[in-house]
Image (cartoon, rainbow, N blue to C red):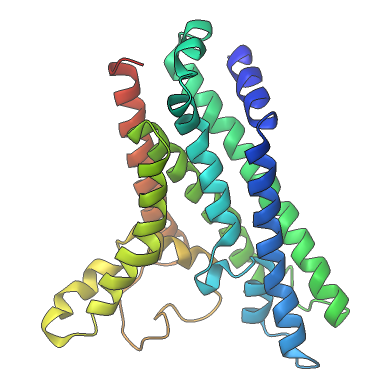
Length: 260
């Protein structure tokens, strides 16, 4: 297992794409508190503003860092198939389950670390503009930030699972962008049509939509005035986690059965 972990760590840290994706993700996330800092001026920092600033806009529907980390998750397996390195990898590490577990552990650790760095950077930007961040470690901001770390982790593991499931990069990228940004938004929008109100109970089971509630500070009606009957923070996170677990489990099983 140590050999698999060492291999995966070396692979992750020697790819230039890793540093580009992390760097761009950190910059995009940091741009949100900068924009809010200029826009808010001397106004009081409300919990909603603090949460949006520190999670880099993720709770506002633009999870920059989570998306870039998900791409790193996709590359963890997709690159190996794209460049044909999966065969020598399996020759050196024939225990497939150990290899996948090593990828999950290394990518997860990197995601959590980068997410904490991003939150620290964003908090520093807020400090520059406002001098202090009231209630940062108190409810309701604290659980929202913990939820953000969990959200980013699940998002990344979903990407890793998709990369392994499709055995490549393009298809996984399409799904990771198309599902949360278009498909789920269209379904939510269709609930506003009276004839399609039967879709309302379905919304709480949409994985990315449910996952976004991990970062909620206020109401969960998504500002649309409709009661979707969402589960609580961790219940909604469980829906997202179950979706990620399903993707990873299916990919893992097929990886053990299919040829390289």
